[in-house]
Length: 268
Image 1 (cartoon, helix red, strand yellow):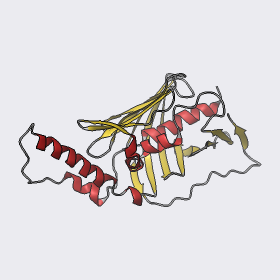
Image 2: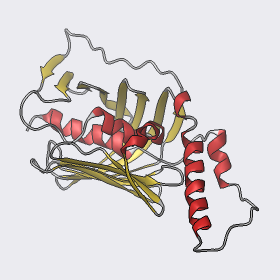
Image 3: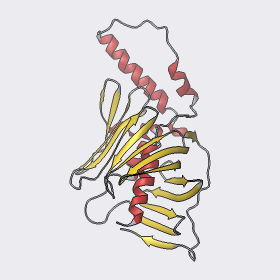
Image 4: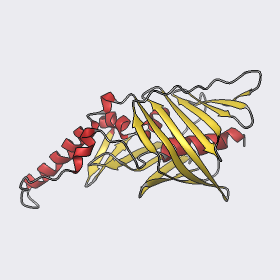
């Protein structure tokens, strides 16, 4: 199995899926107001009016959360801690992610104080710089032949931030109790994202190809998130938490290397 597959799975899946909804967020003013109590008298339990008001309350909060989506140009999740269990070994890394809406996602993985991996995900390809071995890998995100991967750029972007998920209201497949289910299903691929109905915080996600049985799944656990995947390599488990999220902070991230000193490998 090429070494790049390990890097793609560990660092891309951890960074893109495991760093979402972490603690220490810098909230917008509208988000901060969500916790304020109200003195408005509530209707009697079990009445139609109560159910209608509950639905209206959920939509009002949802509109409030998503009101900032048009002002979000990019998102940075800085210094999240992740523990990866793979083939009986545990790896501890610090991850930083920078996502530009509908454009590109950058990821940096630091181990023992040194950046060992820098990666970028675009709509059509993934690039990974292996600083230690001086190799730049490139692989398409879409296949020309055979079955597609269980995830695409759009799926990953929706899991990165609830503000990117806000735009997918036409994908809501159902709303029950305190959760909303987004349905992104494709041929032979089950794609579901479940979020809290009150604030769109991520609860679970599932991308499962029913023909190849490749999957990427995750669930929120307390302040962090746990991921399970067999995509590209064997089964791995990830526990990620922490990190600080900021918005609209311009960062100059480069994926250039010296062609005389690095080996270039194209993977299909």
